[in-house]
Amino acid sequence: MARVVHETLSELFGLNDIKYPYEEHKKIYLKPGGENYRDWGNGFGEITPHADDLYEDLNTDFLSLTVCRDNTNTPTELFFPKDIFREFSDEEIERLLDLKVKFISGKNVSIPKSKIRNIVEYHIDTGFKFYLDFRIDKEAGERMIPINSKDRKLIEKMRIKITTCRKEKSISRTGTFTIVANFKVLHARAEMHIDRDLAIEIANTKEYYFAPRLLFRNKGQDARITNL
Image 1 (cartoon, rainbow, N blue to C red):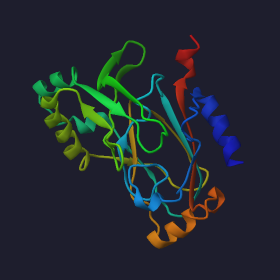
Image 2: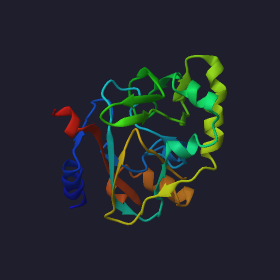
Image 3: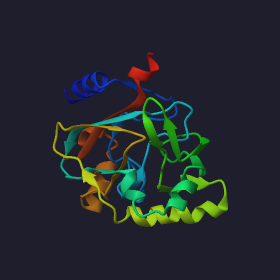
Image 4: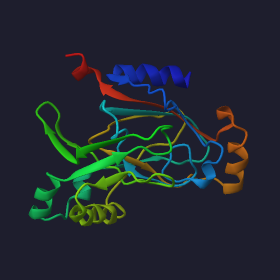
C-alpha cells in the first residue's frame, strides 16, 4: 500500500522517475555490509548533505521519499544553500558563480561515472540551481572535486559552514511522504538510530521486509519541463 501511494503522489507532483540499470534506487534500507559505511543510503552511518545524481547526463529535478517503516526514528535532514552561503563575502559569491567541479559516483552505482559542472547555474524557467555534494565515499573518495585547486578553500569553507547552519527535518513516521527540488535543497541523514550489533544482524538477513527503516524513493525529471 505504501508503494502504491508513493508512486501515485510522485506522479501527481510531476516526477518522471528515472531507472538506471546500474543502480537500485527504489528501496532504501540497511543492506549487508552497510554497518561499515557512511554517506551511502543503504548504510548505517551518517549521510552528508548532497543533491542526487550530479554525475548523470539527465537532471534529477525532484526526489521523493515515502517512509514505509521506520522503527529507528531517523528523519531525513534538509539544508538550504542560502544558509550555507550566508556569511560569504561578495568576492567569494562571485567566485562561486564560476566555480567548476567534477562530480563522481559512489558505492550506490556499480560503474564509475563522472561529470563536470558549475556548482551554480541560473535558468530562466526555474531560477538558480545549486549542484553540491559534500559526501566522501569510503571507496571513491570525495564526490565533489574542484577542477582548479585554488577553489578548494571555498569548498572547505562550505563544508565547515554546513556543520552549523540551520536544517529542517522530515517526520520519520510510517506513511510520511516528502518531495524536494533536488537542485534547491540538499538532503542528508544522521547515523541510523539503532544499536550497531542489531543493525548488522538485520542487514545480514538480506531481506528488506525485516529492515527497521525502509523508504521508497523516486528521483527524476520534472514532467512539466520535459513534456514541453
